[in-house]
Length: 296
Image 1 (cartoon, rainbow, N blue to C red):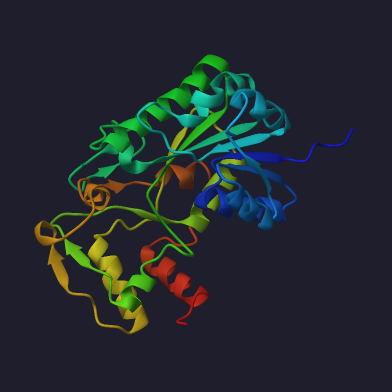
Image 2 (cartoon, rainbow, N blue to C red):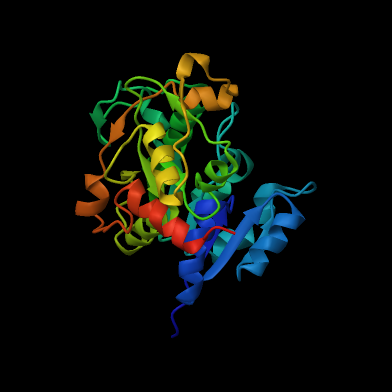
């Protein structure tokens, strides 16, 4: 009897999921990514995955997802929550609870920990979100882990730090003179290159531990102004001037990122999953991005 093709159902097939899919497709996996628009579905297909516009405008979203859940050996959830809860569980929670995949990954954020005034924390630290979005994430984590407790769904939670990678780096703004070094004393947070997110997810798939939560970040939490300064140095351009946080004009979303300062430990992905980060600090990560996308 032949072994079925491993199949990832990626619910909310975004930036990190697309990076994981690239590796899995190269290994012979089948990848099915959901999105809300046909235009994005075409982009998913262009990368070699199947695409499903879901939930569609008509019909029962749970029924629409049912055959794809039956086909999936693994499930990755990237869709973010809102004030009404997790949108995937809201649309098809009962169907998902009945599914029997080998692995389920839920992409959360380190925002669930809230502000820790720059202190080091790990996965055992209390979740005390400081923002509305952080509170939504805590509720979503609990809902997914609740399916592990009540139905045996093999859920794993990944708390991602600030994500960067191809198409998501500081170089374009630095080149255009639009980058700002906003200074807030004591402000520090962690980051993670998208390649290392994909590597962590693959390591978890290989070594599942249902119910576990993992911080996914690099080894060097740093003030945001240090990253901008290093990007300018790599480009051989002047370091952007410093702007005090109190004087900076920012959107409410951007300002909210400065409401939290913490250093998150990543020991668990190394000791439990055997992850060796390709980009242990932003310095290696930025150098790689610059090498991949040289100045036009």
